[in-house]
Length: 181
Image (cartoon, rainbow, N blue to C red; front, side, top):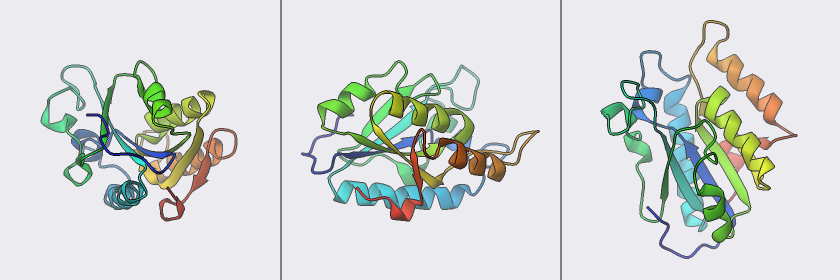
């Protein structure tokens, strides 16, 4: 799906992998309902400002929770694409690896990306780092990304650690409500 209307903002909201099977899997995502609400709010504000909204779906292997076409692969209902949104499919952790997203953003005059979604330690981390390496100004909505508990760390600790690690060298970390478009 390609954006149809003219843009006023040079910012894009990138919503990573907010898919049914990832958010509502056997181990629910940490604070998932609140993350969805904060992403919805940012998407509404981005659209009103003429910013681009990019909804990303991870294509996992057959039989996984992210197997293309499965019910679990679908984006969560609250974050369904709206007119003008861009939907990107990826198979690597970074949304920029193996996709045309960076070129498309540049073609639309986008120089700043706001990252949100799942999973903090994989796709959010990889996409933040790649965005900066590709020359985009990267903003991480620190309270609008999530993950699940692991055998080693609780999800809240993973999120906190990544906000600290990514903040500064890779992205500006800020609360979703403070992000402007």
